Length: 106
Image (cartoon, rainbow, N blue to C red; front, side, top):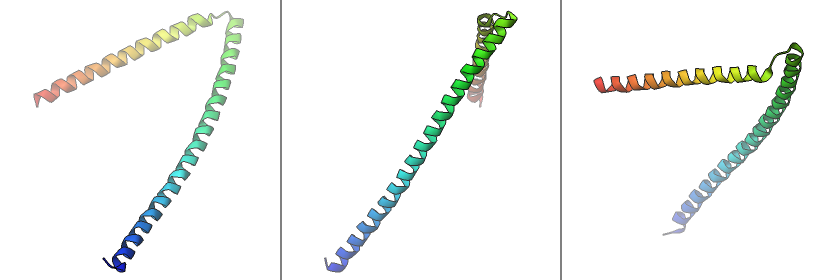
């Protein structure tokens, strides 16, 4: 093999290395951007949690002034939500079962 073949191979390896370097830099930029986004999201979640805690405290104070049992209202809301979730799960199971049955009829 002559110098021409070696030069071509070396050029190909160089091009591949440059491509890998470019991709690595792009990936590094994406990671930095993702870190920034994650930090912003974390900060936003922390702020929302603080605001929610403040609102809850205010609502509980208002409810106490009005003679409303907060625990009872909260328990009722959880029961309604659980019943709704159970109905949705049943509806989805029924839909899946009828879909599976219909697939066998084709």
